[in-house]
Amino acid sequence: MQTLFDALSLGSLYALGALGIALIFGVMRLVNFAHGDVISFSIFALLWPSTDAVAIVFAGELPWFLLIPFVLAMGAGLSVLSEIIVFRRFRRANPATMMIASFALGFVIRYFLLMLFSSRPKSISLLPALSQPVEILGARIPLLQVITIVATIAILFALTAFLKRTRFGLEMRAAAENFTMARMLGVRANRVIMGAFALSGALAAAIGLILAAQTGTVDIQMGASVMLMAFIATVIGGLGSLPGAVLAGFLLGAASVVMQTVLPIDARPFRDAFVYGAVILVLIFRPQGLIAARGTKERV
Amino acid sequence: MSLLALSNLTIRYGRLTAVRNVTFTLTEGEILFITGPNGAGKSSLLRAIAGVTPPAGGRIDFAGQDITGRAPEDIARMGLSMVPEGREVFGSLTIEENLLVGTGMHAATRNWRSRAATELEAVYATFPILKDRRHSQAGLLSGGQQQMLVIGRALMTNSRLIAIDEPSLGLAPNITDQVYERLIALRAHRALTLLIVEQSSTRAQLVGGRMILMRGGEVLLDGDARAMGQSEAMQAAYFGYGEH
Image (cartoon, rainbow over all chains, first blue to last red; front, side):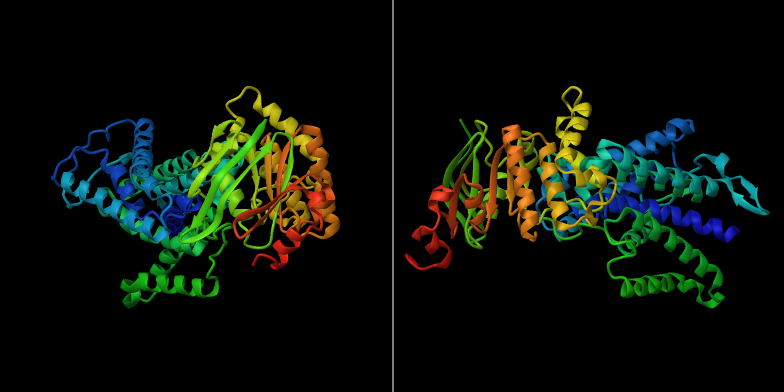
């Protein structure tokens, strides 16, 4: 039972991360490696600049119904800003160039945080009420884990409804499949791309919130490890495929947690090697990903 | 009044010149075929008109405005609709969603929703097969049905000019007949201007109207399709004897 919840909550993080990457990849064929740093940034936005070990919270004292929108807005804002300032200039560049630009942007954000906050991890207590355990079917599960899973499912449903039921969602799906054709039907490229960046940034911020609340610490590297796994999830899910990204995110989370429990003690430190080994196997047998996306052919 | 005017349009891909100094005008309500062998620059010309490929030189005017170098969505919003080669349906979207993508450009106008619904019914009346399958994925349609879908999708934008690249590509002759039948009917019904690219000139001679014959990126002939008929210049354009 405990394992199941561990797997689901870790999988939730990866799924949300993968979704954020897949959304942007879908509309502009950009693998945004700055995504992880958006995760870190949105949480650090809650703190006053300082190099102390204990975070000086400035916006973190807000009640949760203000805190959550604040963090989401920070993530979305930074993400949209990065589109306007950086990625817009690379719109016609090839995907490799855009990817390098995203690495550069990631470093800029990370070193900006480093300058203001130093590289020391800080302890932070966000939403402390959530760390109490609840009893579910005889297992004691941290409330936060339950909320993480429920929130992820809610986000997935909301996002699906948004994409399927709204005008903007329709335009985004059309653009993700064939950007040029969508534009020839009057779909505004900038609007769709900015929408994708805003959504992606808000998803990154949600991950930041969950991570900070779960671990009780923040540090400027915190987004990077999630980003790596999330990126792998988008690849094995089929680059650009949103359902694939979510599925692969949960699978990766499950694989990590299951390996942690079933591997012999001596092998556990090498858990990630086993997880990546499984990734390689998946890619050998399904190089197009679990759910191949349509329209991944080169944009013209 | 001229709806579309190209003057000295030149398109280059790197060092390759695909279209060289092409000049012509298209009058409102006219039907114009652009024909010519492979590599004549027909598709490049359409892509430049739609704003996808920025031209290297020359100028394009649509409805009295200079649209050279404008973004594809701006050009589409001015009333120039494009049906590109290879049909390009949104395969994962349903047929109805495909049709609705292009109505967003009117979202700022009043009661666009009810207008879109009216347009939708009009397209369904023209292509009943689309209505029967409106909630199935567009990628599952046959080639002929996809061709009807993309033409329907272009009509939904309520455009003044529709440019179609090779509507007969990959279709059985009787299906091509159907597609053309609908196009001609629609043109009469809505006062549409049509710009149709076809590799073969047979269709142009069958339908009638004006025809421009291109070869090697240049306009060779411009005139009445039927009159051009079996002229020697046309033979030369396709089979390469004569000036070459």
